[in-house]
Amino acid sequence: MHVQEIAAIFGPVHGIAWLFGVFATWRDPRRTTGIAVCAVVPGIGGLLALRALDRADEQARRPHTAADPAGSGRHAAPTRGRS
Image 1 (spheres, rainbow, N blue to C red):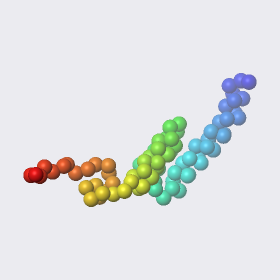
Image 2 (cartoon, rainbow, N blue to C red; image 1 turned 90 degrees about the vertical axis):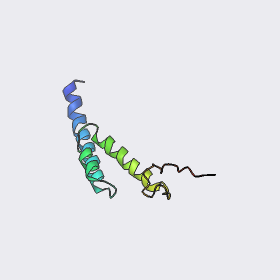
Image 3 (cartoon, helix red, strand yellow; image 1 turned 120 degrees about the vertical axis):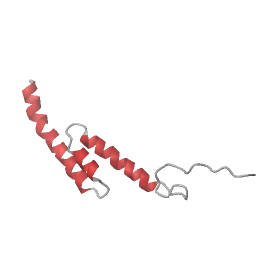
Image 4 (tube, rainbow, N blue to C red; image 1 turned 120 degrees about the horizontal axis):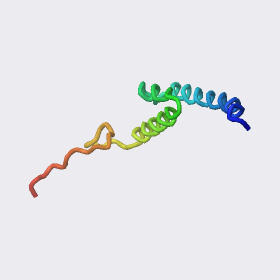
């Protein structure tokens, strides 16, 4: 097969897959403006958007503690008390 024939076959499939990724990201309720913009970057944007959405899921599932009420993964500095 020639390169032009391969491009004629897989080009539209690739374009539809890219559009699906963009629209799926835009419809996701967890998305932020940054994730939506990232999704439209050809080539790697969809992958980066999916990774960002996975990180948002992990942060939402992480239990919040008194030292870390926002669930940012950071803890308050330990205080040194007298024993």
